[in-house]
Length: 273
Image (tube, rainbow, N blue to C red; front, side, top):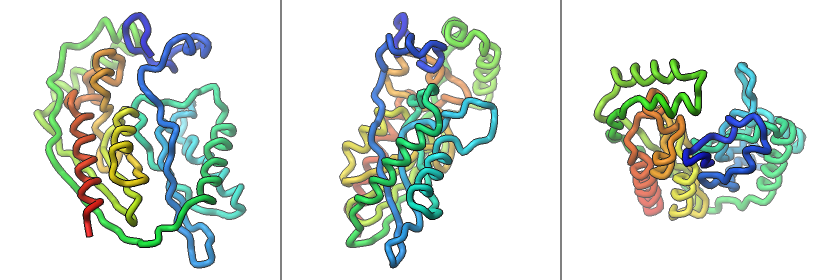
């Protein structure tokens, strides 16, 4: 959201009513794609789904499967038997859960919709599998000056933490970084394309909308972890995802590069034998 001319994160506001006063800076993706595997008698062997929202509904400092774990429980309860329900994180670098939503409700809504979708899936009549892997050098970001005033305004209690992260990254930064992407085609109408970041949602939505496949999963944080990849608009607005550090150090054009490479991979897979 935009507050006082700067981008702020809604979850930083203690009062949910205050967050409602400010418009969202970018879109949220309401869609999710589902892939299911059945055995000969039609019983599900596995379900894979792709959803663009941080698995961060649990705010306690614990190790947790978070809402994907609750979704799996819900799916298995409704189906009446155990089935692995695998979650692929969508492009959700700027999308978090609404923390006032209880985990049971989160699981019920998403898990229930997942079961409904599984019941409506069309079979892949011409099964085939193609994979393309692409490795290249992703440009790094020339580090700017430490934005002390902005950090102090947004995260006053974390000022020293971000200062140390900035100095650490200055010592470790490189002109470019090894970057790995994968595309997987299953049948004629379904594909998965991966990236190694926390990609902002609108970039993932653009990849999906321009994909030559009817159904495309954009799976992030795979085969590496290079931090946040904001949009050009987000860099103008600021906030911690754009601050140079261990959590955000790729080129400001990284989003455009990932979108271009993703679409090239998908187009190549579409024409693969």
